[in-house]
Length: 393
Length: 181
Image (cartoon, rainbow over all chains, first blue to last red):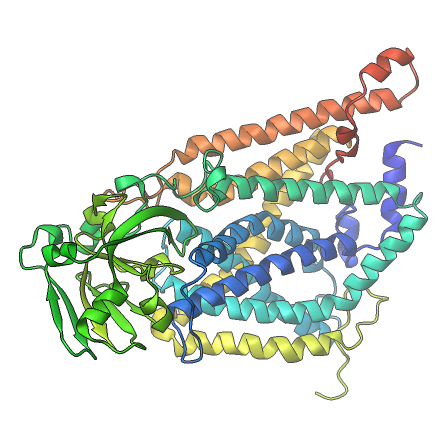
């Protein structure tokens, strides 16, 4: 029997998804393929959602949440997972939606009240998933073709999408289980379905290949060994002033003259016994400490360097701050990310530095000259540059 | 709405059971929390604009992207006979398309900043071209391997030659990609 004959027989034996499946002749438009892709997407979405919510909590900590300063490279991993998984999910989502597309044209469009609500829940699911991927990719490419504030829109859309995903998993639970079990039965009696399961495996292998290619092409900013292969990554980890990438430049922040400003000095104020005013020379005269720490951007890239400067906790001790002090770090850059908070754990960590040097050179203006915050396990946006003041609380 | 039937799974004969209710009871409040967040945070999220993006994403996918793919598949069906060639072509076209989609904002360089050369630092058009070339090269290799395998498993010819032409075991497992729509 010809390949085509077996394929057609098998295809007829496979349960089709939805009415107008007659027009969709490819046998992968069926429940088992959909279930397998659905499971992969659910895992990817859960990873993105968890790491995304975590990043949001770190940047907007509620009273019950205290992000520790250790392990030093943990945030670079969680956020790397967020961005690389999100990008690699693009082919997965497109494949899944294509497999179930016959449902979109199914007749009659609504079969029952339950079916109506199940279909209604697909709008926030599909719209949300597409939006999260489009906006995430655009953000990584620093493209903002909208007026809303990306982090908030992405965050709240993620809650809507993940809620819709839970609804969808409930609706499809029985179908998917049956499809997965039925295939197990069929594998014991393989002759009838061999051709179609071959089609399915081929399709899934093709999707996996596309996922792998997108992952390799885009992950080099996070996974350093992939960088030479990652032709589509937004950064090279070694590319930028002093061999380090930059997100906000001194020109962008209007702080390019700060390092040459003779009136610049660091103020340490707030809940302290002795407020301090320290010039660059004063800071350089204090005991210095070096630490190798990554800049880990929320956009997924990260790069390590050796930073040298004064530990924040030494300055707190010098000013006579309490042992449980928390600190607001303020910058000459008065934009949204021109300040960040050090919780108790971060303020007390010996490697949380106000750095004067990177890789033993004075900071480039784009890296925050004359003085920047750099600490372990912090998002890049919270490594405040062009520091002017510590407010102890 | 007591007495309303539980949402039935579209496959038909499978009984949905309790799972849809569990999903709705857990999922709807999560959606509600997200929706509430959009409006509480309205100054940042611009609900009307965000709503257009959320609905627009689904509509653009369902009414523009998929129909284009379907047309491409239909044309492929007309032009190429069913078989490994068509399957491999399908995979190459689809994967090239996905790569182009992901690469688009990078290739166009919408986010470039003159003051920040470390941002979008690569030649993305060239990178995309290289990746698409790799996709088609992989496709060609799979096709050659598949042709060799078929010739071998066809009516026996001079046995020794066919055995020598046999691909390595890993190629045996290389599946035929789905063909057409």
